[in-house]
Image (cartoon, rainbow, N blue to C red; front, side):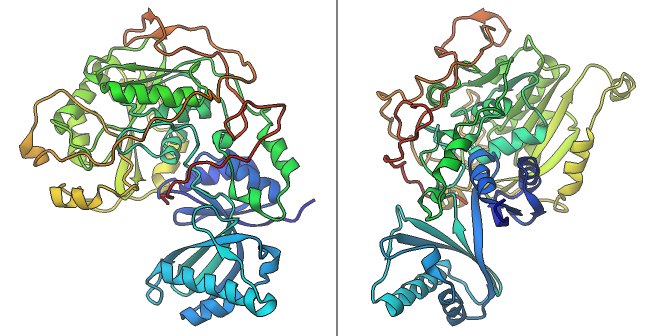
Length: 521
C-alpha cells in the first residue's frame, strides 16, 4: 500500500466545512479545517480523485517543505536545500506562484523570484545548466505560502483553478463561480430527490452544478488536463481507471429548470448545458420571475439574485419585494434558498428565514438564507411535524459566526469602476423591466467585461458516448404544462477524451491543450 502524504485543498471563505465533508466521504484522513483551505492526508490515488471528484475545491496542493524564514535570504537558502532532481529536470519548465500574509514579506512576486533564483542557481552550480521558466504552460507548478515567518512550499497538482470545469462555452457578465454554486447546493442537502429551480439562472451555473450533484458525476470529467499529469511519477493507468469509473454515478428521475428574463443569458445557458451533455436533465427557458407560478412537482429553489453591487439593476428593492410575493403565494410547501448581500434587500422579501449562513461571494460577505414556505402559522407547522432547521443546518449556523452590527456598504460609481475587473466578485447579471430608482442605485453604470467569443462547436465533442436511462417527463412551463423542448435532448451523458475528440474505449488523447485562464483564487 502506498504511503500517505500531506495534502491541502484550497477553497472559498465559507465553504471549508462543505469541502471537509466531501474529503471525508472521499476517504481522506486527518481532515483539518483552516482558513480558505482544508488539510488532509492521502495517497496518490486520493490526490488524483480529489482533483477529479471534489465539487468545492479550487486546487489541490502537495507540500514538499515547511520552514521558517525571517528574510528573503532565508527563503533562498531553504529552497536550495531541497533535492530538486526529484521533481524537475533540465528539460522541464516550471513556474512559481506565491501567496503572502506577512509584515516581512510584502510582495508575493518578490518571493516568487527568490524561489525561482534558488532553484536555478542550484542547477547551475551542480550541472552548469538551468531549467527554464514558463508562465503559460509549465511542466511543474510550485506554490509558496507565507504566513508571517511560516513558509510552505508545495507542488500544485491541479494547474488552472478547479472551478474551470470545462463545460462553460460562453458567459454572461460576472457569472457565478462554479465552486461557489456547487457549495451552495451541497449546503441545502439536496441530492436530486426533487425538482430543482433557479428562476434567475444567468449562464446556467447553478442548474449545471445541480445536475452534476444529482447524478454524482465528477466535475473534472470535462477538463482537458491536470498539472499532476506532467509529473515524473504520474501513473497514467491509475488515473485512467479513475477517469473511466462511473460506478458511483446514479440515476436522476426529476428535472432541473433554469429561467432568465434575458434571452442572451438563456441562449448562453443552453450552450453550456449542451456542452456538459446534460440537456436530458436541464430545461432552460426565458421567463420573468414576476410571472412565476406554482410548480407541478415538489421542488427546491436555489438562486442568486442581483445585489446592485457590480451590476446596474433598476428597482433593486422592488425586485426583492416581488421575490417574496412570488414565494409566499406560488411556492407553498417548498423550500427556497437565496444568496444575497444587502440587508435591505432581504428585508424586502418579507419572509422569515429559518436558516442564515454567512458565505463569501468573491470579496463580498453575503448571506445564504433558507425560506420554508408553508400555509398557516409556524406553531401549526411545527405541530404537524414540520422541521424548521435540520440538525445539519443547526450545525452549519453554529460553525459560522456573523460579524456584529454588520454593515452593508453603499455602492458608488468610483468603487464600482475600480473593482469592475475584479474576477473575485462573481455576481450574475439579471435584467428587470421596472422603473429606474436613481435615488436607490445612484445612477446606472456601464457594464464591464463583455461576452466571450463564440467557440467552434463543429467538433460536437459531447454528441457520442454511453447511453444512460432518462426520465421521459416532458418540458414544462411555469404552470407545469407540457410543451415542446426548446433544446433537443441527446438522451444521455458522454465520456469523451479531453482533446475534444470522440472517446475511444477509455483512451484519452491529451495532445491538445486547454485554453489558459487566469486563476481566481
